[in-house]
Length: 226
View 1: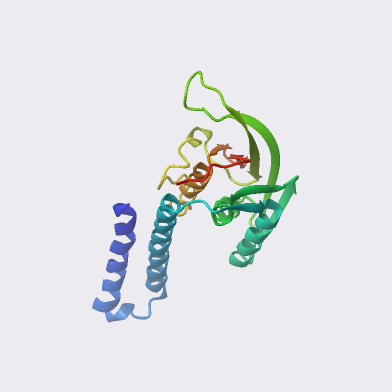
View 2: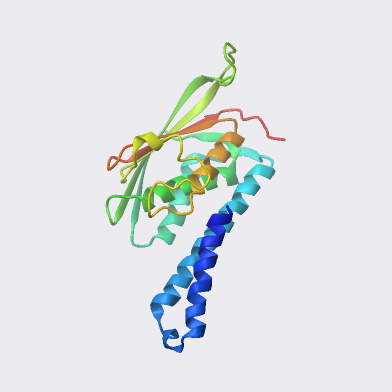
């Protein structure tokens, strides 16, 4: 955490020093652009950490969530943020779910923004989202114990650049970045926490140049976190 906060601050100090110590740099747009880039990195890191703490400390506010409507809203938000890129969602059989609306909105925002950021087509990001209901053992960590419950399985598949499949279990670690063009390595950690807060789990399968599939398991009757 301290490294990710210190590095952009160090660069800001260097570039600011250039502007103040050497008058010839006062009109250097490249330096101003670098300052703005590092300010953005610092802001995103702090914002991500604030969300991380929020997810740790806030109780779930369970309500009925229309997944189709929520995904449409998130897609519209991303279209505004990426005006030159078309985001095409192919949704199949999405229903409603008892969940925390704000947390699910954050979950899908992070997942769909990754699909846009790591697209192969310069002007188009395509995502397919499917839903099925399955039964899973709620005692996943206890050998020999079984208690089955209904879970909603959501699979979010993109046609992006993907990544080396061996990293599948690491992508949800805080500050883990798999691409040079990645953000601050916080988004997927937030996704994992949202799913865990609801008593579910999240997985990712990917291969280079063949896209990625995120699989989310959410209980139909989530336990309210205290």
